[in-house]
Length: 430
Image (cartoon, rainbow, N blue to C red; front, side, top):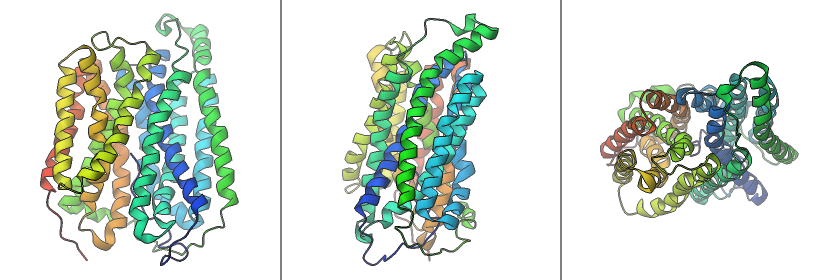
């Protein structure tokens, strides 16, 4: 999942007739997609770790996603303003340094032994990721021949999916590989604080490594900050975008982005704990964590399959079909045991693959010159990843993980309805 183009700053960069042939900058943007996709998916690994260390309920543990995805809602528009003020490359460096700061905040979080400090570190990290995403999508579209912009953006999003596939596996080895033999619920006072500090060091080391890598990338970006000639843009284009919500096709599409991201993140966040259940696979924590990449890898594979099918079948029908497929897999998983229950849940990643770009494109149809404004609003709808997961956790706390899947199923049902509603092309407005 990647942020839609907000087009927050320059209306063009350099010579838009011939495009800009800067292959090194394109490689840099591809790297950004890989990095922020991978770091986002690491949440699925640290959630079970923090849940065990702080003896949290599912709802409390999923506040990790609330802290992370709330940054999209808070910082999407401010980040666009920063791009207007400083330009793409300087803003990318600012975003990378903010991400570095978020990673470094894991040090005091570990030393404090306080769960809220980890949430604060994740919020700052996500603020930087939001800023980098605001830069990356429109920039990759402009770095090259305009006629091939769509192809470049699709290719770049493939790196995002690659990151979400690779990072959880490595994170499972590093973070979940040192599963403690002590039950945190049996400790208190200084002993509990010391235990949490010791056990969270592995999380700190992982994010320190990321911080070092991010600083190197930020330095490279800063060294190229003057490579682009950027033109000023209309300062009011984003702020007047919210009246687009009055249009049913767009408003419902934005709501579906909210629901889709929420459902996708909720399921991904619960995979490790779900596969550890005796009634599914009963795996140890690290082994369960190594299955998370299969969920996100399904989205990577499905994107290529979907790209072909979308040439042959109405996008609305495809969207409705995969949403129904997700509901079917949820029902199978929740009402079965063993390998069937586990693998049907992981297979939902395959269904998720084309939902985000398809909902985005269907919602944007008919906006004409206001398409860039609409993408800014849709970007803020990603905040669904902050709200749906903890609500799913609340249901799990009151019943079971299997029953809690009913909330993502409801989300997919609304998305299926939208696919049917938007199956016909919209009339393009002026």
